Image (tube, rainbow, N blue to C red):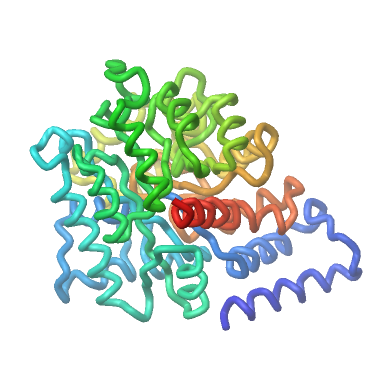
Length: 414
């Protein structure tokens, strides 16, 4: 009902412009345009490719017990909870089942940790069936959204827990995993990492090539965020389905930062039919912000002296003042739009989405996009730049749903 009302309110706002002709949103007064942006955020499904809630809760020793169960609903900590998601129009944040690189050195390659985090998300859904829903497909997300629920699909960040057994891909699919990031901060048994200079495999390993084929067969999206350039091109040659970059941005704006995608990679991902989902972290958005690590360190030192962390409520006034004193430290919502512009120019509007990395990039989030309540701010900027509602709908969810459904189709034909 809320989405129907939001859409009707949007129609009323549009009608108040006085004509049935194509509306020039860029010339609309800001106050009115913000209402349109908010209505679009609540009329369209919004999916975000990467939210690190599970690991954030693990670090905080979250347990599936009564005194902790309210945390995913409403909290002053972190970047995500149900109330803020609803405010921002977020419907389907992919929960990151994050496996730090050190776990891939364990005997089980981090499989036990993956199972623990998946069980946590399943438990949250079970505890709050009126608010959260499982989602193994776009159809599931659509059904949950109609019921007023926030879907919690899952992606595994670092496929190391597959170990050396391809059967584990089916195992994790059955547990709810719908994409796998082939590696993370270090080379693993599957792929070289963009953060690692070892170049163990010069791309994908022979086993990694089989992993990509098996992901296609099972119906798990191949996520090429974090992989080396060579590994990206290797995966591109092998995959029979479109791929995603669940939380990456454009290297054009951050020269030398291999974790982001080059112009050529973005073009090739477009030819593959895939989608790059823009990361909101400052170091992913702006080379200027990347040079200010010393400033970030100084903020951490100030908080440490007061025996605070950035997640403490008492720390927020200190952080806010630090931001005012050092505007150069953070990027803003306009820079996120710049990255979307770049992808649109290189690959087309059908190949860009949102992959915020909320709860995963600390205090480096851009001004205007500090948590999941603020997606309407991005939509507002895009409208001012001349993006149509139809284009924004693609960015919000249609592009990712197209890839997800195609991956399902490819698996069904294998």
